[in-house]
Length: 174
Image 1 (cartoon, helix red, strand yellow):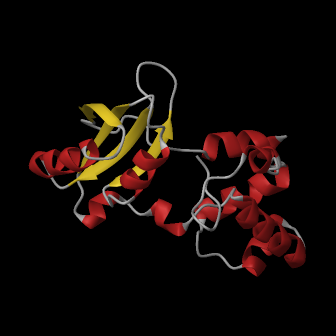
Image 2 (cartoon, rainbow, N blue to C red):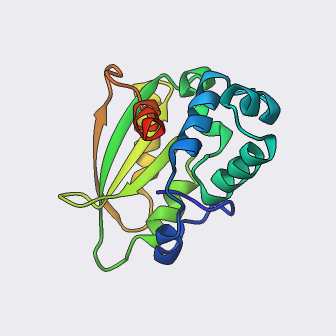
Image 3 (cartoon, rainbow, N blue to C red):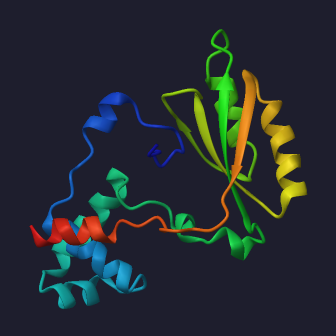
Protein backbone atom coordinates (compact mmCIF):
# COMPACT_ATOMS: atom_id res chain seq x y z
CA UNK A 1 0.00 0.00 0.00
CA UNK A 2 1.20 3.49 -0.81
CA UNK A 3 2.07 5.57 2.22
CA UNK A 4 1.89 9.31 2.73
CA UNK A 5 5.05 11.35 3.50
CA UNK A 6 4.08 10.99 7.19
CA UNK A 7 4.40 7.21 6.84
CA UNK A 8 0.65 6.75 7.33
CA UNK A 9 -1.46 4.84 4.80
CA UNK A 10 -3.75 7.04 2.69
CA UNK A 11 -7.48 7.16 3.24
CA UNK A 12 -9.84 5.85 0.57
CA UNK A 13 -10.48 9.37 -0.72
CA UNK A 14 -6.73 10.04 -0.95
CA UNK A 15 -6.29 6.82 -2.91
CA UNK A 16 -8.93 7.94 -5.40
CA UNK A 17 -7.23 11.30 -6.01
CA UNK A 18 -3.90 9.83 -7.10
CA UNK A 19 -2.90 11.33 -10.42
CA UNK A 20 -2.77 8.83 -13.29
CA UNK A 21 0.52 8.96 -15.14
CA UNK A 22 0.38 10.22 -18.71
CA UNK A 23 2.86 9.59 -21.53
CA UNK A 24 5.07 12.54 -20.52
CA UNK A 25 5.23 11.37 -16.90
CA UNK A 26 6.15 7.90 -18.12
CA UNK A 27 8.91 9.27 -20.37
CA UNK A 28 10.36 11.25 -17.45
CA UNK A 29 10.31 8.18 -15.19
CA UNK A 30 11.90 5.97 -17.84
CA UNK A 31 14.66 8.56 -18.30
CA UNK A 32 15.20 8.58 -14.52
CA UNK A 33 15.39 4.77 -14.57
CA UNK A 34 18.20 5.01 -17.12
CA UNK A 35 20.02 7.79 -15.23
CA UNK A 36 18.79 8.20 -11.64
CA UNK A 37 21.19 11.07 -10.94
CA UNK A 38 20.16 13.13 -13.99
CA UNK A 39 19.41 16.75 -13.22
CA UNK A 40 16.11 18.34 -14.12
CA UNK A 41 17.87 20.28 -16.88
CA UNK A 42 19.48 17.12 -18.28
CA UNK A 43 16.12 15.35 -18.31
CA UNK A 44 14.46 18.32 -20.00
CA UNK A 45 17.14 18.45 -22.69
CA UNK A 46 17.06 14.71 -23.27
CA UNK A 47 13.27 14.60 -23.53
CA UNK A 48 12.80 17.86 -25.44
CA UNK A 49 10.71 19.39 -22.65
CA UNK A 50 10.90 22.69 -20.81
CA UNK A 51 12.89 22.55 -17.56
CA UNK A 52 9.92 23.98 -15.66
CA UNK A 53 7.66 21.27 -17.05
CA UNK A 54 10.00 18.50 -15.89
CA UNK A 55 10.49 20.16 -12.51
CA UNK A 56 6.74 20.62 -11.92
CA UNK A 57 5.94 17.07 -12.97
CA UNK A 58 8.64 15.59 -10.74
CA UNK A 59 7.33 17.55 -7.76
CA UNK A 60 3.78 16.39 -8.49
CA UNK A 61 4.91 12.77 -8.92
CA UNK A 62 6.67 12.97 -5.54
CA UNK A 63 3.72 14.59 -3.76
CA UNK A 64 1.25 12.12 -5.32
CA UNK A 65 3.38 9.17 -4.18
CA UNK A 66 4.17 7.97 -7.71
CA UNK A 67 7.86 8.45 -6.93
CA UNK A 68 8.59 6.54 -3.78
CA UNK A 69 11.38 6.87 -1.23
CA UNK A 70 14.94 6.32 -2.42
CA UNK A 71 15.32 3.50 0.13
CA UNK A 72 12.99 1.37 -2.04
CA UNK A 73 15.91 1.07 -4.47
CA UNK A 74 18.30 -0.37 -1.86
CA UNK A 75 18.99 -4.08 -2.31
CA UNK A 76 18.59 -5.87 1.06
CA UNK A 77 21.66 -7.95 0.15
CA UNK A 78 23.76 -4.81 0.59
CA UNK A 79 22.50 -4.69 4.20
CA UNK A 80 23.52 -8.31 4.83
CA UNK A 81 19.93 -9.57 4.47
CA UNK A 82 20.33 -12.26 1.81
CA UNK A 83 17.29 -14.35 2.72
CA UNK A 84 13.88 -13.24 1.47
CA UNK A 85 10.74 -14.79 2.90
CA UNK A 86 7.02 -14.20 2.65
CA UNK A 87 4.80 -14.73 5.67
CA UNK A 88 1.05 -15.13 5.48
CA UNK A 89 -0.50 -14.06 8.75
CA UNK A 90 -3.91 -14.95 10.14
CA UNK A 91 -5.33 -12.42 12.57
CA UNK A 92 -7.83 -12.68 15.40
CA UNK A 93 -11.11 -11.41 13.99
CA UNK A 94 -12.00 -9.84 17.34
CA UNK A 95 -8.80 -7.76 17.73
CA UNK A 96 -8.60 -6.06 14.35
CA UNK A 97 -5.40 -5.34 12.48
CA UNK A 98 -4.22 -1.99 13.91
CA UNK A 99 -2.20 -3.48 16.77
CA UNK A 100 -0.67 -6.11 14.52
CA UNK A 101 0.22 -3.53 11.88
CA UNK A 102 1.94 -1.29 14.42
CA UNK A 103 3.89 -4.19 15.92
CA UNK A 104 4.95 -5.46 12.49
CA UNK A 105 6.05 -1.97 11.44
CA UNK A 106 8.31 -1.90 14.51
CA UNK A 107 10.28 -4.93 13.24
CA UNK A 108 12.95 -3.56 10.84
CA UNK A 109 13.23 -6.84 8.92
CA UNK A 110 9.52 -6.73 8.02
CA UNK A 111 9.91 -4.53 4.96
CA UNK A 112 6.37 -4.67 3.59
CA UNK A 113 2.93 -5.76 4.81
CA UNK A 114 -0.15 -6.06 2.63
CA UNK A 115 -3.75 -6.80 3.59
CA UNK A 116 -4.97 -9.65 1.41
CA UNK A 117 -8.00 -11.72 0.56
CA UNK A 118 -8.04 -15.48 0.84
CA UNK A 119 -6.93 -17.75 3.65
CA UNK A 120 -4.65 -15.19 5.32
CA UNK A 121 -5.27 -11.62 6.41
CA UNK A 122 -1.81 -10.15 5.86
CA UNK A 123 1.16 -10.90 3.65
CA UNK A 124 4.53 -9.76 4.98
CA UNK A 125 7.77 -9.50 3.03
CA UNK A 126 10.63 -10.27 5.40
CA UNK A 127 14.40 -10.08 4.91
CA UNK A 128 16.83 -11.96 7.12
CA UNK A 129 20.51 -12.82 7.41
CA UNK A 130 19.89 -16.59 7.42
CA UNK A 131 17.35 -19.17 8.58
CA UNK A 132 18.25 -18.75 12.26
CA UNK A 133 17.63 -15.01 11.90
CA UNK A 134 14.34 -15.74 10.13
CA UNK A 135 13.34 -17.90 13.11
CA UNK A 136 14.06 -14.96 15.45
CA UNK A 137 11.98 -12.64 13.26
CA UNK A 138 9.15 -15.17 13.09
CA UNK A 139 9.06 -15.30 16.89
CA UNK A 140 8.74 -11.49 16.96
CA UNK A 141 5.96 -11.55 14.36
CA UNK A 142 4.04 -14.14 16.37
CA UNK A 143 4.06 -11.84 19.41
CA UNK A 144 2.28 -9.07 17.48
CA UNK A 145 -1.20 -8.39 18.94
CA UNK A 146 -3.86 -10.35 17.11
CA UNK A 147 -1.51 -12.58 15.10
CA UNK A 148 -2.83 -16.10 15.56
CA UNK A 149 -0.88 -18.02 12.93
CA UNK A 150 1.93 -17.53 10.46
CA UNK A 151 3.03 -19.55 7.47
CA UNK A 152 6.42 -18.80 5.95
CA UNK A 153 7.75 -19.41 2.44
CA UNK A 154 11.39 -18.76 1.62
CA UNK A 155 12.19 -17.32 -1.80
CA UNK A 156 14.81 -19.47 -3.52
CA UNK A 157 15.64 -17.25 -6.49
CA UNK A 158 14.20 -14.10 -8.03
CA UNK A 159 12.77 -15.22 -11.37
CA UNK A 160 11.32 -11.88 -12.53
CA UNK A 161 12.40 -8.92 -10.42
CA UNK A 162 9.96 -6.19 -9.44
CA UNK A 163 9.73 -3.98 -12.50
CA UNK A 164 7.56 -1.24 -13.84
CA UNK A 165 9.62 -0.14 -16.84
CA UNK A 166 7.55 -2.25 -19.31
CA UNK A 167 4.34 -0.58 -18.07
CA UNK A 168 5.98 2.85 -18.24
CA UNK A 169 7.17 2.15 -21.80
CA UNK A 170 3.66 1.11 -22.75
CA UNK A 171 2.23 4.32 -21.27
CA UNK A 172 4.97 6.48 -22.85
CA UNK A 173 4.13 5.00 -26.27
CA UNK A 174 0.58 6.24 -25.81
